Amino acid sequence: MLTNQDIFEQSLYNHIYFAESIRSFCSTIGLTFFKNNSDYIDKAIALGYRASDIINKTLLLMNKELAKEVLDNDIYITKYTKDISLLTQKLFEISLVIQIDKDIQILNTREEVVFNDETMKKINDLNNECLGLINNFKEFCQEIRMKLDSGELFSYLYPDFFNYMYDEISVYGRDIERILSKKDYTDFYVSEYTYYFNELLRESALYIRGFLDTKEGDIFDMSSFYINAFANLTTKYLKKTDSNANLSIETEKLVINYQRFVTDVIDKLLKAKISFITPPITLDNFLTNINVYLFLMEYIKKFK
Image 1 (cartoon, helix red, strand yellow):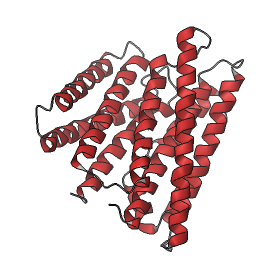
Image 2 (cartoon, helix red, strand yellow):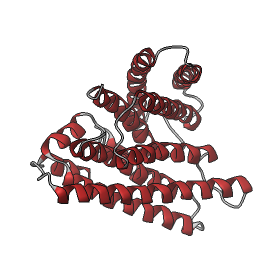
Image 3 (tube, rainbow, N blue to C red):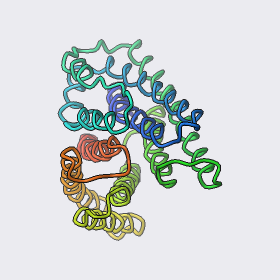
C-alpha cells in the first residue's frame, strides 16, 4: 500500500506531465478546425484552461527535491518547449500563453512543502479534479472522432490521432486511479504500464512518418524502423515470449535510441530543414512522452 509520501510524489509527477499533455493537445485540436467550428475550438480552449489550472496548483505543491527532478529529467519542459511553442505561434499566427520562463523560475525557487493533513487533502482534491478533466477530455476526443467518421466534422488531424490522444490520457487516468486506491506498483501493473507506453511510442513514430513531408526519405525510413521495432515488442508483451525484466531492458534500450531520433527530428524542424503538417508542439509532446517513460521506469525501480 502506498504511503502518504508516495501518493504525494506520484500524484505530482503525473499531473505535471499529463496535464501539460492535455493542454498541448487542446492547443493542437483548436488549431486544426475550420473557424466555423467555433464550438469545438472553444471547448478545446476551455479544457486547456482547466489543464493550466491543474498545472499551476501542481507547481505550487512541488517541493524543492521534486521540482529539481522535474527539471533535470525534462518531464514537463524540454529544452525545445519554448522555441517549438514560439514556432507554432508564428506559423499559425495565433497567440499562445507561453509562460515557460515563469514556470522554470517557480520550480527553481521551490522550498520544502509542509507535509501535513492539509497538504494531503489538496493532493486528493487535485487527483479527483484531474480525473474529471481526464474523463471530459476523453469524451471530447470520442465525440470528435465519431463526427469525423460520419462526415459531420473536418479536422486537419488524422481521425486516428484522436484515438492516440485518448489512449495517452487514458494511461494518465489509470495511474491516478491506482494512486487514489493507494495501490503500489505490482509486477503485473508495471508490465501493463510498459506495454501501454510502448504502444504510445509506436503510434508517435507512426504519426511522425505520417505527418512528414514525403521528400524526407531518411526520416521516413527511420520512423518505419521504430514503428516495426515497437510493434515487435508489443507482440512479445502479448505473447509473453520473454520475461518482464528482459522486456523492460529491451524496451528501455529502444526508447533511448528513439529519444535521440525524435530529438534530431525536432532540431531539424526548428532549423526549417524539414516540414510537418501538424502543429510543431505535437513533436514536443512526443519527446516529453519518451522522457516521462524513461523517468518513470527509473522511479519504479525504487519500489522493486
